[in-house]
Image 1 (cartoon, helix red, strand yellow):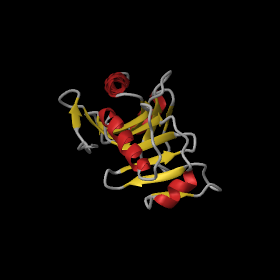
Image 2: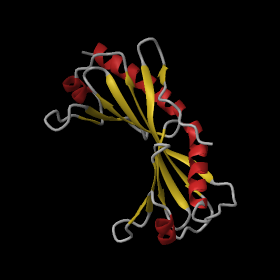
Image 3: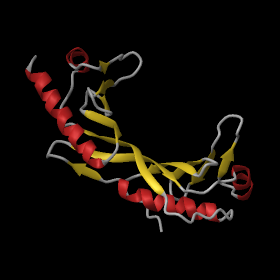
Image 4: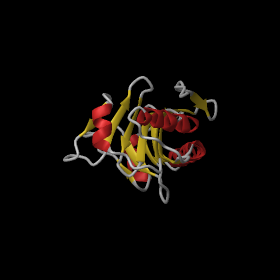
Length: 194
């Protein structure tokens, strides 16, 4: 059965750490899902086809939410690790089973996005970084963080002057580690060039 994994802080170095906050995954259940039937049989759903073509399934005890589509595709959010994705999908299948929707094939799952927060171990001058980092956006009157899109990659960081970071766009934990290490190296090089 699905076991909620506690948020776990991972130390990359003595000064640099991160915690996975959310994993978004998609899955194909290979079964048609009658959304209206599901909405009437399960109390933990929201379905308004005029506004959105999918059904929202909230599993509050597990702290996960799934978007369920009639094609049998689902998107699950709220999972705290890559390893917990299969258990989350199984829990969703079990919930669908309560409405007599049987999934007989093994689902195909894919991590779409991982969000991690952490500390880069450096105090940051965001104004200077906005000029020295390509693809950086900083508008302090609208948001206190600098948005840094890693060139030629699908990773984006939010950087704060305290050294706190948010990393989004990773497909696995190795990408999180690699991108944070590269970010720290880039930031140290930017400091040296001043």
